Image 1 (cartoon, rainbow, N blue to C red):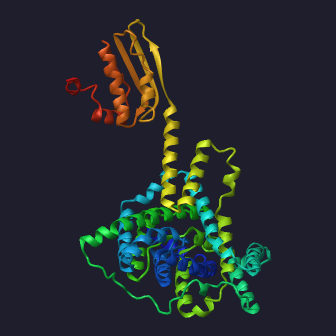
Image 2 (cartoon, rainbow, N blue to C red):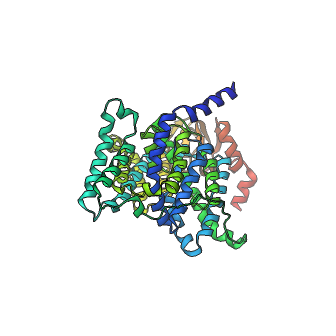
Image 3 (tube, rainbow, N blue to C red):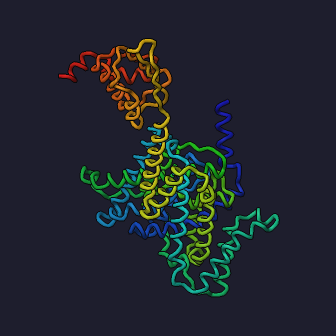
Length: 499
């Protein structure tokens, strides 16, 4: 039964949407070319390094990835981390760092670090998405500054085709509008002989297939010292962007993905890229959105994108070089508009202030630093702090006088941890003269050593005032951490502390 389900799932991933996947893969392949070249330039390497990487990563991840329909290739976020390494040590060390990046990511998959995505709040994901949408749009601005009116006309016409073509009965649903935009704008530019920037102006396209290439670096501790920090940073940023993109594609397609398999898949893909002379890469939110919007859903779309990319840049380079950048800019503007969560702006008024702060902080940090990992880290930390502060308020201590004046029961309700420990201590009156104090923690939970230390402090303070203290009702989980780290019920440790 299990094998039958697996076979059915695999068949659906590859053959469940053949026409849509092929057409979407073609659109993605065309959109990948200028991106891969641009990212190669950012990293300071030859354009073929980015193009070979995009081909290899897309093909490998189609088989090994955990999110069907997601596109992985060379990315700007990864390219920015390579600049210093390439400048100071050259391409060979970049290839070595790419291999090590893949190893780190495979290890992350086996350690099930992909499961950590459940700790990333919705506000952080929304901020990440909005920041990437802004960055994608900003990346198109150089193509729209100091240019002739023809470029603006072509871009506007391209956007018109993208948004209006789907309204045409039958045909509009059968063909992806971004593909029609690219083909028609290229035909118009060639027919009118427009003197505008094309793909060939981005850089020289490779004319040979990639070959197996072991990095020419000495296998020494010094080499490891050089590439280790870069590989670790690339692995973290690559996995973060891939996991976030996978979550976005999950939402767009209303399906689930295997995040831990995706970690391993990204690692295998990067090792493959490094052995084929390519740079490290990861999932691309822009191209993934293009793929989904163009009808791509399965692994076939990712495979087609990678294979067609290589075929086009190697065998059809003269034709591909004629594609006007304005057409691709129109496609990427469509991606940025479609990626941005416009509902998050509407929801600002009704969402909690803490959620708004987390979302906006994530956007600001990512946009101004161009560091996706830093933006997500800031968002996660803020979300954690707000959550801890909120949960810390749900703690109360009710004081109940006993039948005798010299006895009192304190009933603790809620969560006691680092954020609520001070509040917990402040609820007790240590100046009251008492002989018997009962602390009832039946409805409370002690989470960490800070909470245990707070309980110790309360008990020992009452004892110093001459009261007998009983702690009752502790649940098993709380008792485990209190027994391990508490001292109030261990006379020998109390004596050591007082000495």
